[in-house]
Image: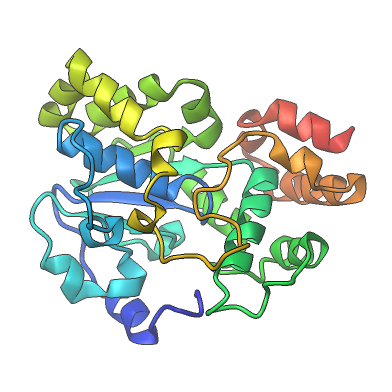
Amino acid sequence: MPAGFPVEGFRSGREYRAQPGDIVITTYPKCGTTWVQHIVYLILHEGEPLPAGRSMTEEIPHLEEVGREAVERLPAPRCIKTHLPFDMTPSHPDARYVYVARNPFDCAVSFFHHTRGFVRLYDFADGTFDEFFEYFLAGEVDFGDYFDNLVPWFAHRTDDNLLFLTYEQMKAAPAEAVVAIGEFLGPDSSRAVHDQVALERIVRHSSFDSMRKDPERWSSKRPDGMPEFIRKGEVGDWSNVFTRDQARRLADKFARRAEGTDLETLWPDILAAARA
């Protein structure tokens, strides 16, 4: 668990029982969590952005940080986020789960910069990517091994109450992703995303250019010289950071963990480039 999360928050969060109508945004860290939180918020508010001075964590809190009672106080429909693996996430057949997967190469780079930026929590401000890569590959980072999270959620991707998206799909066609999320969340949300004016507002306010403004809506203030919380959001930036050996080692682990699944169909071009 992250160094800044209270142990009691985790214990209490594990006691939460999902309710009909709950909206649960679930990802591995640095795979588009905040982006999807904002999209869901915008859909539920017909494209009106978060008011000035408000934090997204107040609107859509992190279950394993704030705990059960804080979530139970939320008005319906309750919206929460979690990075917990499938078997630890509170489950209800009438709750809705939005899962976003991001290729592990870009995820690792984003996670590295994320960790460096939280100087009050980690002694890693001067850490290198080479060091972080070894931790990531071994699963010795916040929320554990990337594949322990992705593989079980992917196995449930056809469940009726789960919408499985990839970060790369969302980047390539953001309006389509917004419509898919809105239709999945129910009739009211579906009407919102099929209103052209509202849809345009949602896409505009959830763009990376827009989200880079007023970054303290999403995270505590970063020290000068540290990476921004909303940093690049690019697909393929990993190729500027990984060594050839690192790319092959992560691709090899992907192949091992994907054995017996269709997981490699998510990012065939990226995996091919990593093995080249």
